[in-house]
Length: 335
Image (cartoon, rainbow, N blue to C red; front, side, top):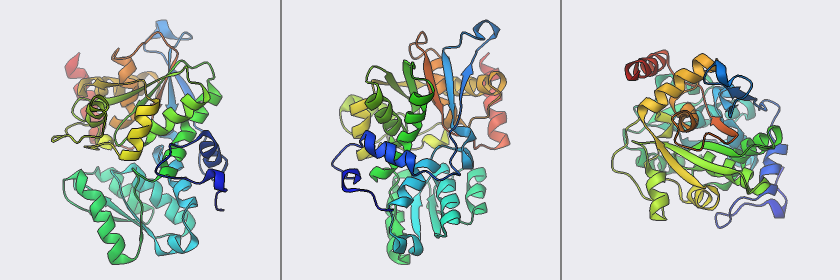
């Protein structure tokens, strides 16, 4: 169903609360309203927790992006869906589009980096999508998407710059506010800026007093540097175990939302990420991929105000057994 005129998207305008609510209303039944789980770091914090996890690792396909995928697919014409969609992804968007493509009968091709987790590649292919590897440069992914779209007659989707994605991500923020109205701080991982901008928009539009903080790895700090420069800038070198936060430059459209709605961006170390993974696994009994636990790492490493009632987006749980072992070894080595 096409959106009403007052719900139409424009790259020149930030997403509105009405667009986020519309996205939420049209999510298919397969999309889960994921729980908020209190996290006590030790027995003394039980029943007095300050940190809650928004468990999108329990979402269908194991990550948050499926929400935005269905919102974007809803804004394609029947002809565009029939011709198929090509997009770039580090893994979780790939699985989301693959699942949606299988559900809606739309062919899906996903452009990925050579270093993408084999687990995520396999998960994408299991849903019937094609994976097209494009080398090692993350900035080359979208040009490859545009080329394949022309060659194959498919619809090119830009997961960074298409406004319906941001509104779809915003449904997570809406659920956070619905389930914990007295939340004081929300932590979001930042890569291209899409999920961070979408969650922040929803939360701030519902309650401007809530503090929103983005969290990035020290070796993947493009949005951190961009915020200080006042415009999107690219980093020359990217290195982090959080492969899902692989953007070497934030998107133009998401960055406008980061500037409008984020109160700050903080950085965490690789050790912080590993320790957060271990704490979430052992204390919350939740499995989170490195990118998925990065927001919580900001709280657990003391990089934000830990006196505030806080929700951290646990954005995904798609990782290999070897990565889980590496994270546990890193945390143990740092003790």
